[in-house]
Image (cartoon, rainbow, N blue to C red; front, side, top):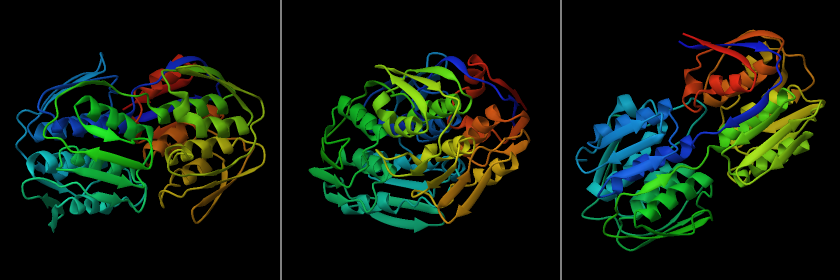
Length: 419
């Protein structure tokens, strides 16, 4: 078990560089299985989730070489023959399910354990399977595994997603690249990570139009080649540092970002009286003395991201007035609230809404990171709290943030890691 010990309050100042996006590299590693040759990825974050995904594709027969210092990953799928994604790996990482589309398209079958991941609520894979069935696959549930098979080759189809699921959009898009004919995904997710995956697939030789809109058209091709691709910056890591700067009254320049990916976060922070200046690849956060209360409702992109909800809850605990945050994506994403209340926050949960009475004095204490973003929220609160905070189970945080303690220390935070 790992622990972060944080002394607060502090004021963050300086520059921090954002790593590549976790939610981009995971589906892109899965997509590399579609290629006939080797792919090379740059700006790859050194995260536990990335390691697990690498282990998974290696278990399928791919050759993987990861150089964390260079942030470079090489995947050669030439020897992929196994179509079984085992429980011990899939249970650790929900994104493991994304290998089903590439395996089904390339090998005609895939057998994958039901996925795991953070315990933030139900995230069924029925939309993924609905798409595969529409493309001619048969689905069998057997002893905790899902098996998909297709005779010869997937066939293009028109698929409407009941919800703009990022995972389903990505999985179906990958499968469609080697299908016969045209596939149209309607009500598709429009997240930047979907666009990044499409960019990589196109560089491999795929014919994809409309990524970044709610209708994506994919004309199947016979084969795809390996390619070199640079992963986009992680907008959630960037947003987390933006909120950390805001709650501490800091003055921070956040580098290696795409400001347009952060529009909903920037808009809400400006509304909260935080000064934000955007450059081509950086954002300058300059916090005022007074944080204003907000009303926030999470939505699929380009709405306010659910992955930033917990961090904003911490910020609103220090704001003047009463705030309300409504979570529309996951039904169990307020697990950080009880831990924040231990630090002195006044928060009431009503269904999927959190009502936060702000301007509270936060006090350091021992709290538990129940999931990835909850852990980030507790770190943010600890930076503004008086005294010493200990955050346990920070392995969750390691799943989504590269060396967050080192990056915070560069900005002046008093944070240490203990095992």
